[in-house]
Length: 157
Image 1 (tube, rainbow, N blue to C red):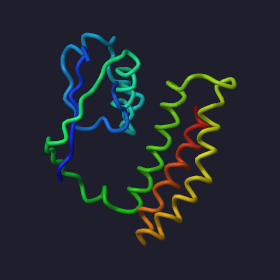
Image 2: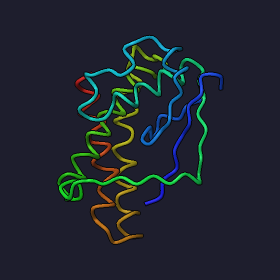
Image 3: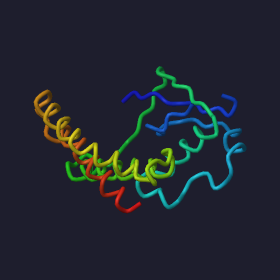
Image 4: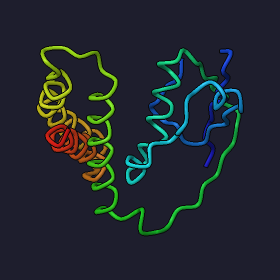
C-alpha cells in the first residue's frame, strides 16, 4: 500500500486528520513542552492526534510528500467488521474529545456536543448514499458508527 507522509518542521499548519506515518524533526520536540504525548489518550491513538493539534496551535506546519511510500502490516483481527465498527466509534469519541480540548469555547462549552448531535442526521444520509453508491454495508456504516462514537464520547467529556 502506498501512503503519503508529512514532514513536520518547527520553522514552518499541521493537519491532525491523519498523523500516521510522519517524520518529526527534533526541533519540534524542542519547541513544545513535555510530555509530548498524552498517555491518557493512547488507547485510541489519540496521543498523536493531540500532539499534532498542539503543534498546529503553536503555529508549526507540515508538508505532504505524495511520492513517499509507506507500508504497514496489520493483524487480520483488524479487518473484521466488529473491529472496524468499534474503531470508527472510537475515532468519533476521539474527535469529540479533541473538539472539547481545542474548539473555540462557545455557548458555555456546548459547541462540541451540539456538533456531535448535528452530525447524527447527516451521518444517516451519508449511510444511505454510501450504501446505494457502493453496496458495501460496512463502508456505509462508518459515518453512523463515527457519529455515535462522537455523541457517546461527548457525553463523557
